[in-house]
Length: 502
Image (cartoon, rainbow, N blue to C red):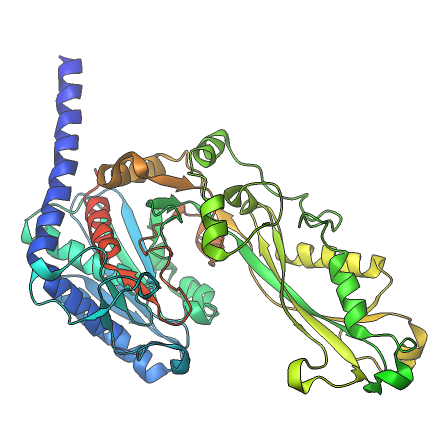
């Protein structure tokens, strides 16, 4: 009898999961025009973090939409900063609480780089780079194709999840389904500006977040193979600027070339000493603190489709750094030269030995790496190359005392974070997500980008997963940002499934 009961339970849950998917698809089919129109309305609101009047307009709109669906809401405020939109949807008898994090702010825009006004959403038959043509917004579900795209700032990063969450609630309520977890909605308004006040917001409102069992971060794109993915970690980020010095003023290159030290040459030699010919960082100790993967994470990594050849074609790269695969390289701390400056080029080039040269260095960190220690390692390497390090521009006495001088300006940053795939609640999310997408689901140990996820995993001591829904070619942070309609539909189905997860 126990076996029969177990089989019946399994069949019931499977049927229930399939039923949720079918109901979500039916809801999308019947309400697709309205969903796209709601998305268009949200995208029409400028949402750069420092533009507080418009940021507050976004927050009030989202609050109103949550209230309409029976969500208890609060606007968490600090003077001079974008507010947190907080929502709570309690469920009688629920024994766990899921929190959905989304950021509603977006990157600043340079309208001259956009094909259309970034705050006036436009509808296209396909991606522009695929020859997509502008269309009128649909008035009938028969006019909607999953390959159609909406172009506007924050279409892909990160307003789409807000619409998928609201639509999932609509579908569940319209079909009188049961939400199975208490739901918290935590929508931030300054993620793209660095989340400088996020730590304080969390500290000031611990009573609102202490009972959360799992954080679901709705941000980022699906895998480059175009398959859906769950991501269990992010890289940390930090960096520095290095300035090298030649003469105390620019000199005529004819009179002083071959005698005066050239800061650009000094800097390029210093930078070249930090990596080997294959692009691996050769700074002593740079990889020493990398936390190894678990067996389950290694298995997940092995099952990720190889994308290196496709990426090389897409990005016009013949010889990527390192000998490992793209996915394996994400598991190592990186060191990237983000910018170089010294003198001028092109028509502005002059026959001079410049006085200084500067490099901006970005460092992406993985689990186990401390941001301050990694910067210490870089500084130790600079000293090994014979440089005296200063924090301000050197005075005449310092210039005459040391043959090679480097000013190092350290930036802030935060550590990486990663949640174990072995946790029971994580396994529940994995299985529920597979109910939506089948075996195509990719489990990615770490995302290449950075988010302040450590505030949740390390300080709040709660597990966190990233639920990306945007298309991988959404022009995130760039001009002509967009979202593929099929990805919007996928997000609605995924949110519906997780809100009704047994």
